[in-house]
Length: 428
Image (cartoon, rainbow, N blue to C red; front, top):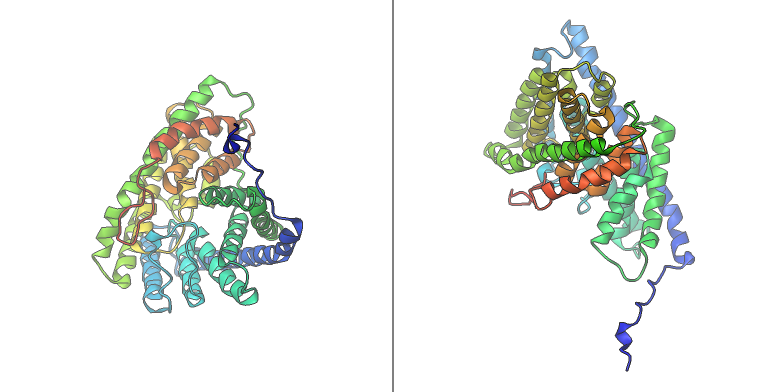
């Protein structure tokens, strides 16, 4: 007799259109609002940054990026953020070293302190990006409002919509959000609907967020790298070697996080931990130069616009200093994300390898360096591939990067992540 269980599996049930259509309007609203909050924080931090690093030192007759001012500003930023963490309700959320992209929704009362601490961190020159606090704030607000407006809807819906919308806004495209969300959904299979049904509303939110950002701010990740038109075997070999080496370099930060975090925790109080971290960051910035300050996106563009102008020693110093700055900032309590500074580290590392071996194509070196460092520091495979490919703006680079990601992934998988658990141990 035929075994009934041996036949083809039943088709995956699909959500009917009447179930998906009501999700369109909430997704659009969440996407637009999430982007506006992101753009507002970016604008505020940039305006404050200009005052702190240009207007104020100019009025005092001091060089904005002099050694004295760099150390003073980073230390003062540490005191300001420490005061927020200490006194503002919610204490700016959980320990930043224990948070990644997403997480459980925070209470609405935490959001003002979280955004204030994140804005001060961005304006003060700390080597962290806006992604973690912005995503956390948008998730908290969407979850709180969504549960009141539509109590019958699952709370997880609002978390996914807000995360997708913010990622779309951050990168100026819904593709990055689709990759992040699809990677998360594959770890939580749902037999009741197809993957694309579950991506329907998040893609709308991400599209609305990215379009709002694009229309209002015109972001670009184009680094004006020379285009790779005809990749060969030597380019593939170079890409695999650079990506793997960059992954090993990025893992240094992951292995160091629990140890450096433990050192700062011995100070016990945010008004000691965070200013001490700011002082260390000021010393690192004074040593590494102004390009190693801030989240790193504008500094990356300046780096890639001057390929060939930096020696291998200068590039190695910037990569090492930025890696150390990211490690300190992530350990001592500053509020921010790791993706943008990791991109700077990857670019500097890639340019360093190209300075050592000029035969490596600049696009291969830079994109592969970014791929390796992002794989190590984020453990987000799709996002790492996406960002590395976008930087080169060369379609032929995508196949090289897909293959280069394989040995780099073997290096990082199962290793410590750039995130701690509640006991201060590294996640794996």
